Length: 419
Image (cartoon, rainbow, N blue to C red; front, side, top):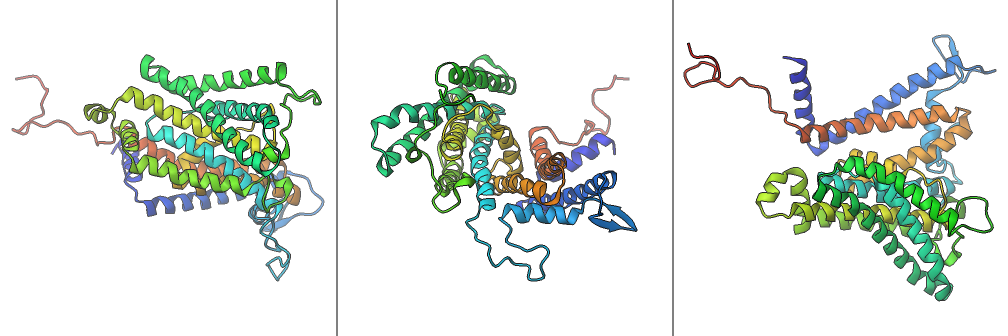
């Protein structure tokens, strides 16, 4: 069997894997990533100079202990519920409403929105690489709308109940309209959506930068940012520490959106048209689906979800729009791939990302491991866990039928020269 056939056989097996098998594959990939990361930690610890070795293997000292690094990583992401150097193990003073867990849930919440954004487009057979740009403009629209409308509303709880939902809707509309642009280019000009969405990311970033720096800048700051919103116009933490920048209301909204997107995709005629257009476009058109309209609508919905992510970033984390928006849209691509483009799968995938991001800070401060090495460990885990699902998606998109020579009914090969 040729190498090509071997590769196709592996892809066929991944494509046909059941949900249980895919979970087991992801778990095995996670274990492998941890083992590879442990080797990298040991090698890095060997070439690093230190006064006291953190661990010793086979009579050789290493400056970094991989077991300690991973324990601190996951323990720190939860706010240190375990005492790693104490036989009692559990921390009696641990409070689940802590700063570390707030950081984890903050990242998780933001990635739920961007993961859903990418998942919707992927289910429609479209590669929306522009969630970052849609998030940037959606967030800016939310900040400007809130700033100009807030003075007309009563301050306090009543004003917040009116302003915050409207601000999120504005962010969704702007993100959706920006997402519809590459959708229309794809539908009516056959422009490749990967290229157009990537380029629109840069355009969005520059538009936002110019608008804020030239017209809507904060006069009291040297940073390119809008004027901060009043506290009542933002999503304040209900129970978690203020510095964690996390609101449980935003997470609840994100989870409700997960259910809503799943229902839309799986239980409605629009969702059926969207999924059919992505999986079998020829059959969809034969069945009467308006492929062009579905393309534009799908990208609008995807962009709206990205715009909501920008709105939540402004209202929950920053309280304003500021240049240097984190790459949440690009992280959403990996979240969606890891989730298999399933809305419910986005939640655990986003939680894994949130854990790795917030736990990395604990590793950096608690073990002395440089942040560059922590970034490598995080990237390894993401890469190893996401790649099986990526190859499964690849296998679903290409022809995996084994190559067979066409045989005539008399046993001879068709297509040869007549004797």
